[in-house]
Image 1 (cartoon, rainbow over the protein chains, first blue to last red):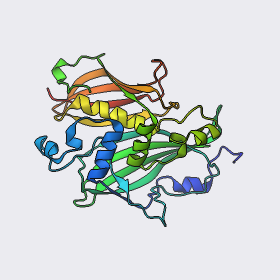
Image 2: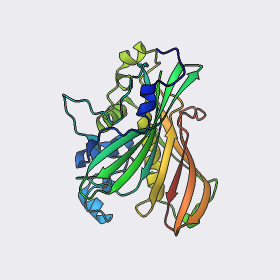
Image 3: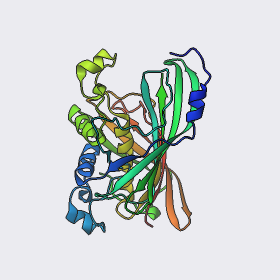
Image 4: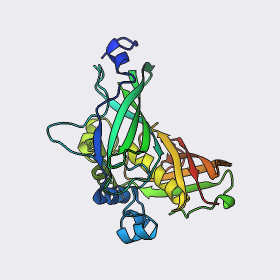
Length: 157
Length: 141
């Protein structure tokens, strides 16, 4: 735990630096599982015929679903640039989604994240905390089109 | 399910809601869908060992429930321009959560018929708002 409210040089250097791309697969199984978890009843998210009747070539991805990272048991997927973080606990502070193009089953997306801001701040309930703002750009690999951008806020304490 | 809306028939101040049960099965399905397997969302003993009253609903699931409500308002002919939420509080599982969206501005821009909305997620008591946010959608006119 740090006693300082100042960002370290290591943290400052991480701002605006892009992380390594992480590849996300959008599959029919992934879309159906996501749609079921969120409670969608529109059958275009489950059934190929219903999707085609709605004007899609295959299952469309529901809003916010951008696939799952390819799992490698020897390498934990990490999108964000790293820095020496003195805090060990993390909270998800919020998410913004900007859909740009419809994503479909079969798409493979690369996700590239960068930290847009870091702030060290006092908190009544958590003590000192580090607020991390990030932006991630998702690009479809088949044609290089940016299909979505997300912004997130993470809180370490 | 909320029916798809026509821009001409929507008014500022209009409220849309959907209510969903947040039982443990729902959270396990979400864990599989999202890859978030943190045990505070499905393991009672683990959650209580972390000073939580019960397993808690994933923040991202609440955000995507907002996305679903917006998708239903848009219907197959509309689109979501953007939506976002802040996770201000935890929601214990095994209760119904109500997702809500209120039209705060109705306007036309670049040939699209747009709605700005305030969105959020309320607990079963009807007053506790844990996931406030905003959204903009385009709906057919």
